[in-house]
Image 1 (cartoon, rainbow, N blue to C red):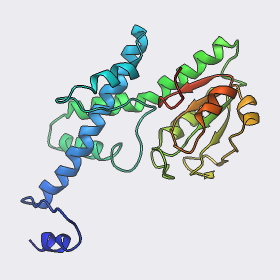
Image 2: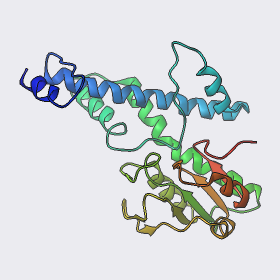
Image 3: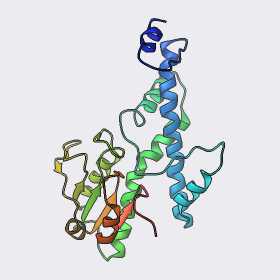
Image 4: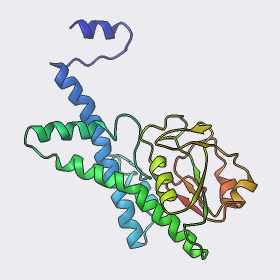
Length: 235
């Protein structure tokens, strides 16, 4: 009651529940809901790729249904403080109570595997040009965990960069919101996004779809593009 009274002084709508445990589980349910649905749509992206179908067309058409469908979009993985971590805390707690949270753990596995999937797509595009990943220069476009912010916590871009380094690529990045990237053992600086920069790398991988980026210029000047976010203009 005291907490409700306090928050009502500044927040328009306060929803009281019966206990702090219930309140915490509300947050965990919301984050887990998103994690599971992101995992589902990431798997659907792989399914569509194997079947030769445009997953973005499928999602957009499904989203026209006026009820029973909530649009989620695939990508290189999930980041931030909540979605990658909170469901795993819940899964850990339930293991201590001798219960396995199968949906939660499977979604986590699917989402964690997406950087490796997209690195495979980079390798395919380079192979099409007669090049190996080793010795190639790859530009990572966007390193924040989501668009239009500067937060890199748990960003899938960190795994993308790490995997590219492991395969022998030289990695550059551009992010208008993150001028320096000093995290997870990385120490890099954002490079200017210019036609010369784009023409000077072997492949661009769009990891975070910041609104300030000119994706038309990327499409015109990059030798090869792997777009994990459906950011480039389509013909």
